[in-house]
Length: 145
Image (cartoon, one colour):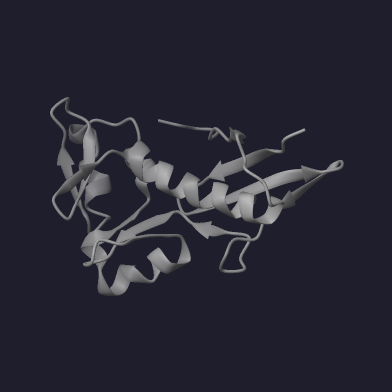
């Protein structure tokens, strides 16, 4: 039977776990940590970084390092003026009025950025399990705008 992973996609950090018997087991990522920073960075050469390596880009490459993306999830551009003051990257208005992140001339929706973090977590689980993961449960915040 294929394993089902559980993911907590957090604003600051994210975690992936599986059940081993009756106990949940948090999976260590490629960097050796149980927590993966919920950060995506894009280098000047076009490489996409996720997690701890992306977080390190925040000092040298702040305009291309996206964090706290959940604060923009499902929100209109006009609703996020306060949140925009807290981030160094560019938040723009999509044609439908949604908030989008503009990185290196490309518009990314909050779900697209979140998907990049989820891919990193899924890969960590697959590396740990030694098999492809096809099913997951993702936590829902107690309060979600």
